[in-house]
Figure 1 (cartoon, rainbow, N blue to C red):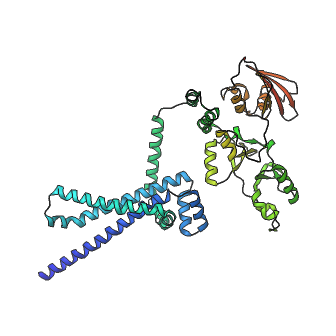
Figure 2: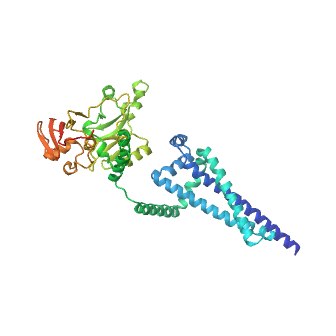
Figure 3: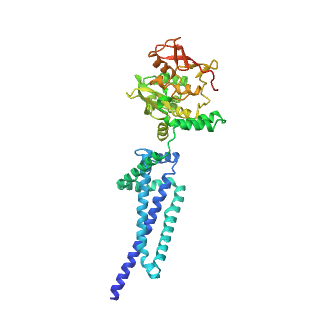
Length: 443
């Protein structure tokens, strides 16, 4: 009997040791998963570049977790995976720790509430210190190393927990929509009025920036793009020396490349990529340095486009219509100028957008955007909505009003405006004299 008792005691002792080792391993795993959350979501753009350059299996899996299928969805899926995995591990720690400490509490002959309080205190201390504080401090200082180390675990856990991850992310999306619906809706017009009231005595530039921030999410690419007729692009069959001469003449850092015509854009040429050709350090032809073009629809909102520019780390997109034809180009600078106003550098030349003849008369180029002209006259953005049709420029609106390309000297009217065509050809209106019949115009 004594021998059997000793064997049973030894078995229980070994079982307790194994259980303790499992708990220690789970605490380590909990800390690893908890630290990975800090590590992944503290990565900067330069950290991401470093991961790309390392080109190891761990760095590739980490980038996959952060970017596939797209950045926002990948972030939600990754966070859901970390939370599910961490909670599963922590619950396992609590259950196993309770079983491990059960006999110990009995030997102390403590009351039930005292046992409960000690268990909660001890397990909480262990999870907070070793599962949260220490790992997150380490993750803050060694985020890239921890990201690479945990990428395989999280990648395959995400595959394994896919149904649970899907349910969690979908439920948060539904809650998000519900909250957005219940929030007070404030129209853009009300926000603009609030800015006018709150900043009556403030700097006009600051007021315009605030308005730009409020309205830019409601502006489409078509409203700010550079139309194809004003785009400097190069034929893919252009000779190298001719290309160099064109680059010197234009002074742009990026140039679209087309085949046959502008509707068939085949690439974008970054001038900095041509340095080996210009210095005769490369025997490749210039066409081999072209980068893939990025196409966007004309009705895309510029806040979404800005996010895509940031994700893809590019500054230029080709704008296409519903039939796939190239409408023009849009750049990062175009978006920023819509928010902050004109951005000038040492290479920019002052461009005459309009000239003021007197208090009521202005000269505008036909290509000026109606939104820009409305700002000059301090009108609402939809002032010309009734007659502009699909047009976004002054010249386009006049063609809509006239139902044809107006000739030089023709006078067209709309409400308080009188438009006199100063210059036009068979394709477009070039210059227009605009008379605003209001007696006063706020400067």
